[in-house]
Structures are given as C-alpha cells and as structure tokens.
Length: 228
Image 1 (cartoon, rainbow, N blue to C red):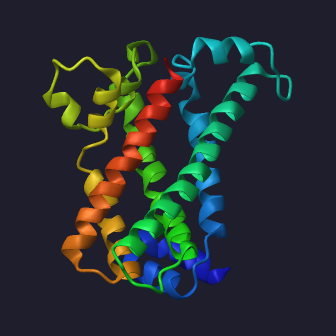
Image 2 (cartoon, one colour):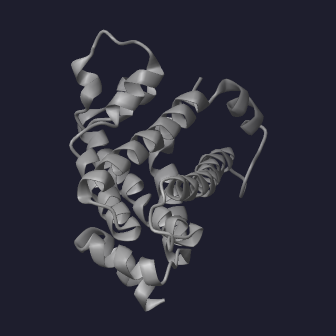
C-alpha cells in the first residue's frame, strides 16, 4: 500500500520512478481509487456549469429521480458514475489495443496487459489534475451566465482560440485540449512508454502523442455528445 501511494506522489515528482516500480509490480488499485475520488469531486464542483449542458433526454429522466431527497444529487451521481464507467471502458479497451500493437511490432515480449493497465490508471490521473487547474481559474474568468457551450468551460488558452471561424463543437472542444498543459500529459506518457516498452525516447514520444490524441478524442466525443 505504501508503495502504491509513493507511485502517485512520484507521478508528479519523479514519473520514471513510478513506472519503474510498476514494471516490476503493476499495482493499480490505489490509482483507480484516486481516479474515482477525483471524478466525484470534479462532478460536484462543476455541476452548476455542466447541468446547463446535460442532454435534454437525460435531464428529463433525472428530473423525477431523487437521491438523499435531492434531484441535484442524483444528477451529480449520474455525471460521476458516467465518467467512472467511461474511464474503466477506456482502460480496458486501450490496454488491450496497446498490448496487441506491442505484439505486432514485437516490442518487449515481457510487457503484459497488467503493466499497461496499471500504467493507464496512473497516467490518466493527469487529466483530472489538469482539469482541476482549469476549474480553479473558471470562476475568475467566467460567470455562470457566460457559459453557453462546453468549450466555454476551458479557460486555459488552447489552439481553439486561434481558429475563431471553426463552429463545429467537436472540433473546437478537441482543439481546446491542445494547450500548454498538454505538454505535461505527453511527457508523463512518454516516460511511461519509454520505461515499460524499453523503446527510444523518440518512439516513446510519438506513441505518447498518439495515445494522448486518442484520449482527448474520446473525451471530446463523450463530453460534447452528452450535451447534444
């Protein structure tokens, strides 16, 4: 247990140490618990904003549901549980996909599903941490009435600000993820791939970018899709 908590701390302070330990002991339970906790907290923090974008079909269904005597609580649980289920599905699908790719390209035969699965739950924690940073600035730069689209919740400058002519909500939200904090995400993924797969930093970086883009593609589809 102590080693698992060290992995979380080193994920920020010394990610190579985290993935070196995961290579020999691929533990993911604590990381999964941390992910679930962060998703629940975020669902509670951003609910005043996200409730404006719930699909009308879902919103009407939730209107008659109460949890602890509160419709709001039921809606927040719906958002949190949806995020956790999506996280689990992505962890399984991506881990299977990556292990198949590693076999096709004959990358480190000792690399198993359990290694990628454990690494996934650790690297994915960067996403809610980045979102926390974004949300911290949201009340400073946005009022509730100013939030008209899902993209308006992204206050950290992203590529989407360079293409004001684009109106497609999916493309705009996807581009909003490409910001300065994206470098942190790619860096951690690069360290993970390099350490676990034993490939060069260049190959690890290219792989990390592809994984990161696929991740934000899934996030975009889920978040924008749930609002339309």
